[in-house]
Length: 158
Image 1 (cartoon, rainbow, N blue to C red):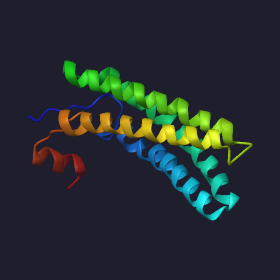
Image 2 (tube, one colour; image 1 turned 45 degrees about the horizontal axis):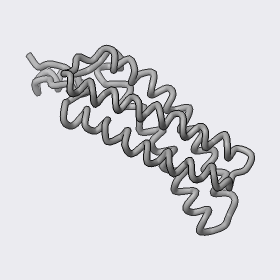
Image 3 (cartoon, rainbow, N blue to C red; image 1 turned 90 degrees about the vertical axis):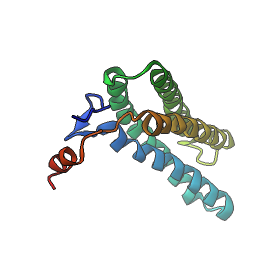
Image 4 (cartoon, rainbow, N blue to C red; image 1 turned 135 degrees about the horizontal axis):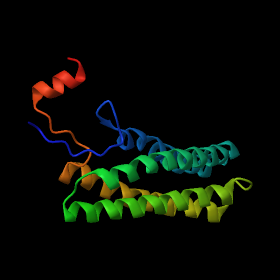
């Protein structure tokens, strides 16, 4: 019988945290991209778009974090994996503080240089959090179901 390295936060056998994380990552990365376009084009629309993306990413990250925390508490992990999971959680929480701070600074002044600088810092923090998250999935199999092919086919309805 195959073993599962999943926590309790699943939907039909799929980890909810892993399903939700791409949204804040895409929104926050999109904020960087729209800042770059705004800096190049000098069109204020792009900076307004960055502020909206910061807000949407921050809201999505809070939801993803709830499911990530449930996984953190319920996935059986080795001591090394738990250490990396803790690093992932702490850097992810840092991103959840940094990006909303950038939003607060920019919500009325979309081209705030301090706010844009904090957005860049958030991107670095997000990259580090993603690295730790990737280590958990790819090196330790956290969030991965190790079913036999017959079980996987049955679970997928094939």
